[in-house]
Length: 192
Image 1 (cartoon, rainbow, N blue to C red):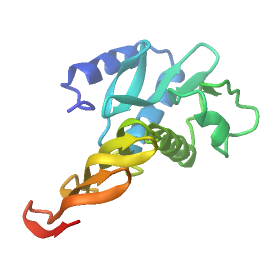
Image 2 (cartoon, one colour):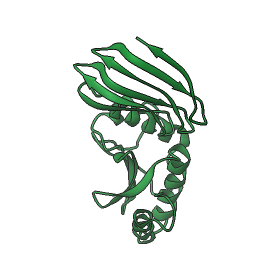
Image 3 (spheres, helix red, strand yellow):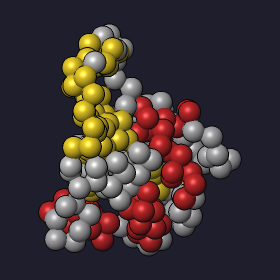
Image 4 (spheres, helix red, strand yellow):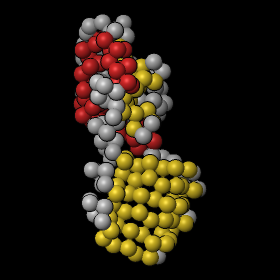
């Protein structure tokens, strides 16, 4: 799993961060630690040459240190405009939050940024949709068609165990729906 020192992607992130000067290195290492707590199921890698946390292959939170500031990248052009609580004086662009080289991002703000990005990833009207718990763990997955659930869907508990399966046709439940316990035993089947 990424996020461990022996994973190649995490090793690339380690090498990148080791090359940063102080205090930028300490500041982004603190952000990395916060992101590991907020997104325990995420993988680490480099995107656009910068460290990033990914959920199911989707970039959720990037970061890096620069000469005069550190930056957080939500990998979206709309997340920063929707999140409240960004301290006055911190520069933002459509896709970048710049913060002081010696002042890590507050944990509460990181949680808001991550939550907003995960919610944005879930906004799929046509195609495969992924919905997440706040910690980046998969909550459900299935197909969407014209803004409605259509086809096979699966729901998971926060621990990752399968909870329910079923199918939709244009937003209506169809076929057999099954509910599973944490041990993978079928506990209920209902036909629609």
